Image 1: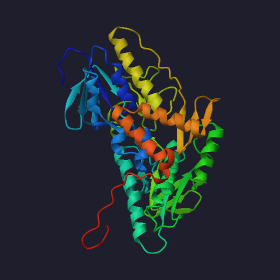
Image 2: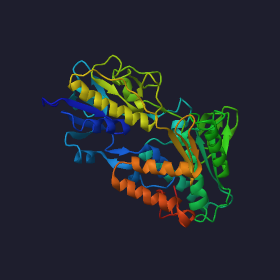
Image 3: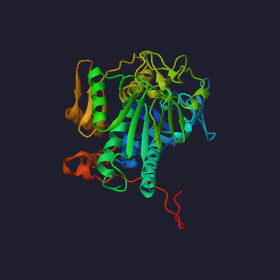
Image 4: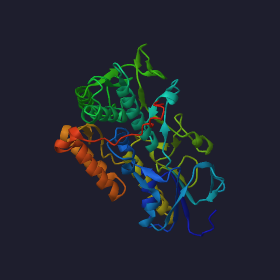
Length: 422
């Protein structure tokens, strides 16, 4: 427990919102402790590139302790928040450590929502963390090697559940990996033996986007030989595939779950008000409802405006909270959070993306893809990550090299001395 007279700000979560809040306090007369269950920040918008062998895991992660190099009033603690004692302004961590705070910022993000679907958590792979992305990559290469080593017409069938940005980006990247990098590497497999099917309960992909962008995304995926199954959701995931709400089944060696997110289970123990989906309710200033000096931002926060769980609302929300803490220390009244919509985007593959800057300003194709690349590289933490990602993108998508791009190989369990491959 800290005994310093300097106001102590604890930020829980080193994602977009947490880092933005920390940076907003760089000149404030406070000490800041950033707590996260991981020791690194993950740039989640590019996790699908790790899962599809386009980027190394290190390209999308940043050592959180490095933030202190440019912010001396900040420190890092590797831990997991388990209890909030608001009456004492104290938190309790998983290891039993307690910390006193003057201000508390909750920005711990969310996890995968399986919606109670039988078998989904057990048999499908989700994509919300670095380790999950690596598991998808490893399983893909394991299934490819298994199919190549078998006799007969072996298949590698991938089913993606969810037609949002994550599902669309995964489907497009997997299709390009199959058609460009893996086709020559696996001559034992037929051209049509690796199939990608995207299952979506709705009638169109990318619901938040304009109609023409949704249609473009579907057309672009079909051009890449991705099978689209609309109008039926996944009701069960089994060891051999998925069952749909229309009674059909789709065989699969790999199922990727990209349908939604929910709060981590430990949030229910924090004693803060939550919505039905587990998000923490906040008022117009992003202060947690009914709690003094506790704020929340990012995916975990449910604001009155019901902002989307995307990077920009998290970044702007974290920055706003940092400024509100600084204002409170100066005795100023809190300000209402005003979100400035800078648009949203999704990529489908090489030279193909959709960008929506406003209801009337939209982009598709190469210009949209170029904007997507530039913004994502610029948004990465650390110059090393920016340079590494730029080089990988150039080799993966640019010039004459893209058809021969060597993928970042996943881990496949080694062959044992007696010849078996389990």
